[in-house]
Structures are given as structure tokens and as C-alpha cells.
Length: 151
Image (cartoon, rainbow, N blue to C red; front, side):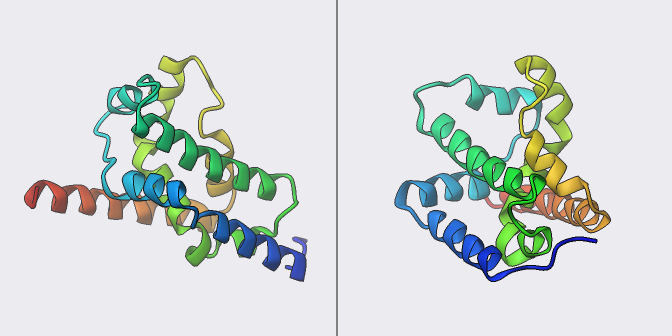
């Protein structure tokens, strides 16, 4: 039986939310959510291998943040139900949905089977999470189409 959410869980969620408001993190999140729309693993790798660029730093910052938070859930530090609530983790689903179609190839080409792994595990270990990922992937496709129609 999953542990019930505690006041400490709620406090941690609020602290994690507050970290997302830091100025550079806001820029990183805005870029990843609003501008980064890869069409292939190679599109992702262009950013991954572009060390020293702001896009590379932003990808690492956003991916690292959500990877750390997901690890809290996977290790039992943070209540999964609170974590998966869309007002908190919706962005994580969006950033992962953008790379999900290419994740296997991305891991192979990077030679790292752990790239985005904690995020993937946190998202896919429940039926609700898997369903939400499918929903979010459809939303990402709609976002891509609208972006192409209105460059």
C-alpha cells in the first residue's frame, strides 16, 4: 500500500516548485517547453553535443531537475500521488514526451542507457502515468503542427 501524503511531502513539493522559479531555470523551461521540438534523435544530439551553448545548458538544467525530482519518488522520499498531480509534474511529462519517440536511439548514440531513465521510470510505472504520457505525446504533436503552421 502506498504511503499517504504527509505535510513533509507537501512542503517538499512547494520547495521544488519554488526552485522552478529561479531566473535561469525559467529561461531553460521556456526554451524546452516552447522552442525545443525535436524531430529525431539527431535533433536532440545537436543540443546534447553543443557544449557551451545556452541550449545545452538549458537541456541539462531541465532534464537534471526533473531527473532529481523523479529519483525522490522512485526512492520513496516523495509521495508519488502528489508528485504525479498534473499541476506539479505536467511539465515533466511534456519534456519527456518530446524525446520519448527517440529515447532508445538517443541512449544508443550517446552510449548511455541511463539518459532520462529516472524520469521514464517515474512516468511509466503506473497506468495513470503511461496514459498521461500518451495524452501528452498527442499534445506535443498538436503543438508541433501549430508551430509549423504559424512560424
